[in-house]
Image (cartoon, rainbow over all chains, first blue to last red; front, side, top):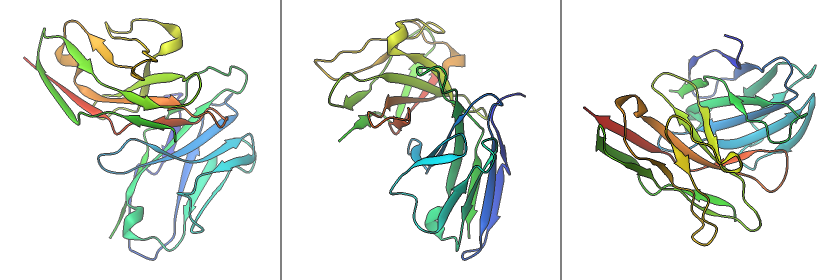
Amino acid sequence: DTGVSQDPRHKITKRGQNVTFRCDPISEHNRLYWYRQTLGQGPEFLTYFQNEAQLEKSRLLSDRFSAERPKGSFSTLEIQRTEQGDSAMYLCASSSFLSPNTEAFFGQGTRLTVV
Amino acid sequence: AQRVTQPEKLLSVFKGAPVELKCNYSYSGSPELFWYVQYSRQRLQLLLRHISRESIKGFTADLNKGETSFHLKKPFAQEEDSAMYYCALRDSGGYNKLIFGAGTRLAVHP
């Protein structure tokens, strides 16, 4: 599968623990997005990277959340001191800057359960 | 505020029946709208976009600016159409991020 890859697919953690998710976008894509999807809702934007630069962060991204894309390739999303309200599906998507109307390709997501 | 509303959480039809999944949006300016689909155990994928004015898998969607709607239609539903459907709006703030509706589950029964 040469699409967007996310790891792990599932994560169960205790409240208060830190978790980190990884996203590997499609190799030639320089735009990378993180979304969060809670039960019964559509994906909600969290943050955007263009190459290694984090250009936009949603108000949903509290101080406990941090995202990086150090070399403009893969990205990580870390949640510190997890809370039960962080339980959700975290989706990564990528697209190419070269074509403004290109579609965003989504990964299969990481499902986080905070117990 | 930019917003996408999908009023139906579930749409249940029989095979061969027409399907219309509703989507309304709130946006100032010229919107760019999409339908994404998620089949069971698969990733979210683009179904169609309004600027392409295309028909994919028999589905079409017409942008109605007067009614601020972008309903998805198919004249004859198939069992393999059963999936979650999300309407999405490209945010005007740049960077091509998407604003999604809550989604509608389409269940097509034999």
